[in-house]
Image (cartoon, rainbow, N blue to C red; front, side, top):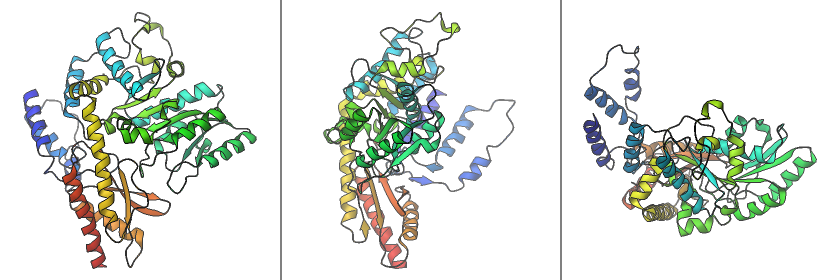
Length: 455
């Protein structure tokens, strides 16, 4: 079974450059064919593998070089091997002493992340299923650190560009959604800190308890970076927990350009990262870092008599004390192994390449009459729309997206910024290189020209 699965996967990876960026033809028919009562008898593995392989061809090719929608996650093969090993040996690392060496591997990966942001030795972190769970634990930690047990007067501050998982995290942490304040943004779609100060003042005068400021190190819509250093100053003056959502952009800290754009991020109380984005790992790999590890532990640790035979925390953290999870998989190996295998320089070079590719696509589209690109890419999101000579622009751009994606060589997504229907390309996959971005620019400009001619 292992040999057959590996042969399929190697072939799968070797054909990504030729595979369609999306293919949903007859996908629902194949999905419906799987609906059945639970089987009483087993089925031959080769037949099951063929079913899986056929299903994998139907959908968005999130592992391919043409996938530029949402935030791509390409998935390094080394991480696949790590998961194969981790799932087979099936060791428990939520408490350190059942598997000290493996728990140390996971803690080492988290310590590397802390060091990347110049966090002190007291800093701690957890690996999560993604940015959503990491944001949830961050809000819970901020709530515990800044508010009393009766916390319903607490308010936190975001913008309309902040990832939706933050508002969801606040709701799951027990706050009414009306306590999540949306601070206005500047024309560059960054948080307006003057407006933030006024919102905090107004809330205090109305009897609320401002406690948390959430800023972005790369928004999903456009890759905008909030003014992190100035936000840290405001947070300190207003006694707010400063949380940075760096799920998409945080690992650009590895590059000189990213570190320059993230000046002040080391002052954050907590930072969310998604290794399944910026480190090209498989989906299901997020991280939360907290400057004061004791605050993270205090917000999550609950003892139980049935755990009394296990060792208390020592030089290796007990991750269960820092996380909502007790039972969980050994996520650390899929982080530790690729970094050890490839070295950090390989990731830095790949991220630098993605920054260059975003600039290339921006410049190519900006040179074509009719395209509007209001925001230069700060990271690797290129947001654009086309202004047709006749007709309604939003409707035109909806048709433009459909025509672009119909090429099956690239796959883009859209968003609404204000009332403007906006297309966006996000370049993060380690399999996306210059040839595909040059091809993307031609596909996009040709699609606009064809639609204009048809109009």
